[in-house]
Image (cartoon, rainbow, N blue to C red; front, top):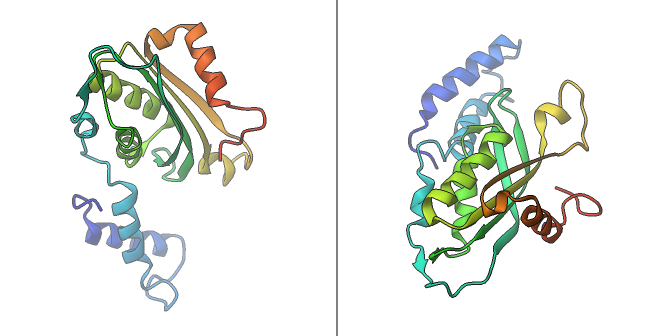
Length: 196
C-alpha cells in the first residue's frame, strides 16, 4: 500500500463528493465508504513516486549468450485513467532483445505494475514501460504492446463495452516493421484472442 496517500484527506474528499451528488455520507449504507475508498486509492496509486528501475537493478551479465528475444505475454494490467479516474484493464506484452544483460522474468510485471499504479493514460504507460526497460537494460530493442478496455469508454459516453485500445511503444531494433510483425504474431493480438 502507498504510505504517501493521505487516507484521511481522501476520506474527507469522498464524504464531500457523496454529499455533492445528493447522497447522505452519514447514512448506514455509506458511513464506511469514505474509508474504503481511501484504502482502495492507496492500492490503486501505489506506484506514485516508485522508481521502476529498482526492479531492473538485479540484471545479470550474459556475455552475448542469450537468445534473440525475451517476450513476456499477457501480463495483467490495471490502471486508473487520469481523465475520469475510472479504471482501465487488460494485458501488457513486453519484449526485448538482450544486449549484455538480462533480468529475471518477474521484474517485467513489476515494472508494468509500478508504472500502471498511478493516474495514467495508456499511450504514456506503454512509452514509460519501454523507456524503463531501455534505460535499465540497454537492450538492442524493446517493444511494448498494451491491450486494454477503458471504463471511460465502456461505462460512460459512448458505452462501448467490448472496445479495446491497442497501443505500441518501441525502441531500437524492435522499432523496425519486420521485427515488430514477427513479435505481433507471437503475441497473437486481435483475431481469436481477447484482450481481457
